[in-house]
Image (tube, rainbow, N blue to C red; front, side, top):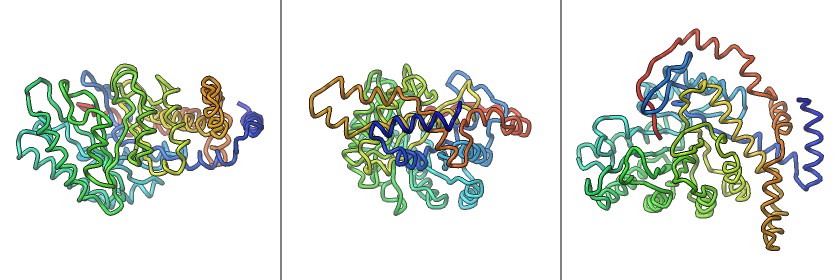
Length: 404
């Protein structure tokens, strides 16, 4: 592409449409997409994990990979950690290690689905012994947060039942509520807890936190530091996620996202691949809300089974950047005027025009101004990092995979 000439033509057109191009670029430069430690290691489905040459084997290699993705994009400056997968003896040292590579530790994710004792649930388990162990793990993760400089506790539970009558749904609700209220008390002063939901899997009759309304209700019971985390793959077919986002934003309870794509259920594919317009819709709600969306955390949560780990993560970040750029070039003033006039298709057309705009020249210009390569995928493919880590690390065979 002729980056400069294409950018100048696009900038002129956007300016004529009433878009402040410099303001758009400034916002794109501040974008923050958090990548997950587990996305750099071997992962897959419940059927098979395909080992990938050079896949990260420990948190130190994961940090190195996350730093590489940030180096390429300039907008992925933090890495989420999963405990106990990323457990270390020196968390302050881990934070310093990340800082030395130009990134930081982001959300802390407890694990309540891997151990055998959680077969019937964690915080809602019929056994008080299991519930106490799960609560101890919650407290442990709250204590890790200040050590690594994290302000986010990201919570997802596999808790639920498979058969009618297996357990009391209302009793489990009360147990979960009590545990979350207790956890809220252990959060650092600047900490937030993000409550995630999922309407099925691995529980198939009922899930204790099945949808955004249940997560929202729990957040209200807990206090101001509790918010809802929206995983874009955790909904029934046809669910209007942009509507959920708008509602939670207006209530001040949208804490963040786990970004991925789906076609059937919780497919955990690369975000923006199956339904890019849906991702654009979500971003338009966030941009239109303005300052109220400033504290929302954007985190990737995907399972890269057959894709190259690093390239998949890179494309994920870039797809979020593209969707955000398109949302930023919507003329919201014009949109409001058309909405007020009752012109249904005219209003829809304003969004479609922005969505169909080729923003690659704009993004290339932003990257060059940030000192990055204008085409990160081309830079990745021309670089020797992947070959080097494959030679250094080899192939690490791991069993199991995170389904979140």
